Amino acid sequence: MLRKLAVTALIVILGIINWSIFSKEQQLHDGQIVYLQLAPVDPRSLMQGDYMALRFTVAEQIYHALPKKEKHSSWTHDLPASDGYVVVSLDNKNIASYRRLYQQQPSENSERLLHYRVRNGAVKFASNAFFFQEGDGKLYSSAHYGQFRVSKEGELLLAGLFDKALNKLPIETEQE
Image (tube, rainbow, N blue to C red; front, side, top):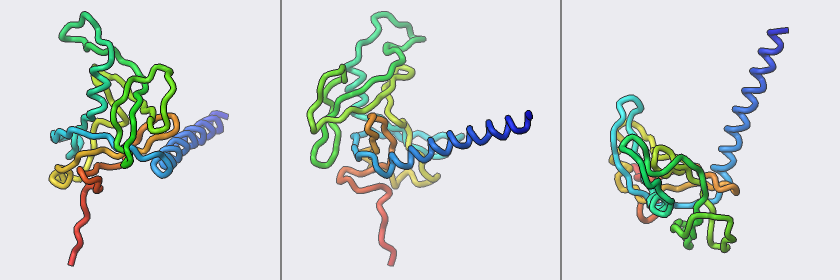
């Protein structure tokens, strides 16, 4: 009996994990493309290999628009942990620009809701880091945009980094 219960639990857990993977793959395939301008920083992590820390212009604008705690010590953050939505407008290349924080107001056709999280006093989207193979940091040094796939619910998945001309990085060079 205990063995059947364990096998059933394992099947349920594997089913949930596989459904989660499937839904993220569907979002990467079918989600709306949105580009967020970024300001990359290139630290090294000895435990995780090479990666680029990502800060987004829209995230900084959200930070400034959110109400801050009046009193906080050096041990606390001026923004409490929270989740919310930001309204962005998309240009003809799907580059997002901050419009306002979402507060149940109607939006226009050219606007999109994006989900954000505030953690440890910082505004974050799907990811605040982009990992790449060790030694490939220079290939991403011209990154100017993060490309996200956005679900109907406003959840973002980072799909890649792009340069100022919206070329996917790393740029493939033709070999002769």
